[in-house]
Length: 185
Image (cartoon, rainbow, N blue to C red; front, side):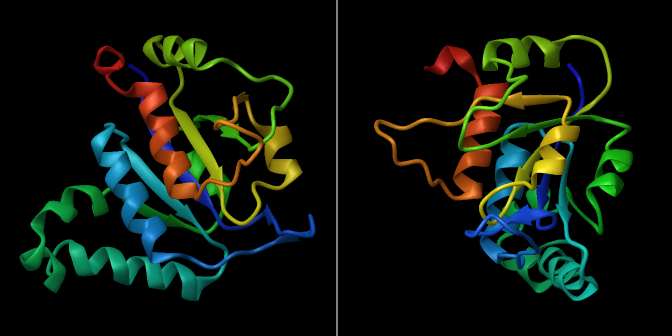
């Protein structure tokens, strides 16, 4: 199986008005996506943020639950998940650190060049370059990131037109669809 990593991008993403912006780090995103990454065997979870103070915040969160952090003694089960977190300034840094990975994205709306989850699972089983699943905060990844992607996964659709999942929930669903135990369903 190919190496699979996840990147949570805080810039460049779009805001409610469609303008490119930078979002702030959310503690829950750091924890919950790390836990999903560990559950589904993801090698690295990159938190991408251009602002040093935000990267330092993520580093403090991770340090609290790993190494000599006080959280490790309280809840040791968090360490295997939080130890997968890598903090980088740019998406290019994440792609390089992930081994010159193919970049896969997803969005709430269908995109051209989408591949099905069945095709994506088959692709992950082939030999080849690692894959970096790129997720956006805010209202999603900026168009230039989407255009640079090697592939787009289908949107996660619910029972009606409402489609506004948290990125944490979307990450868990995507990872389950890509590498989860298909026999359990």
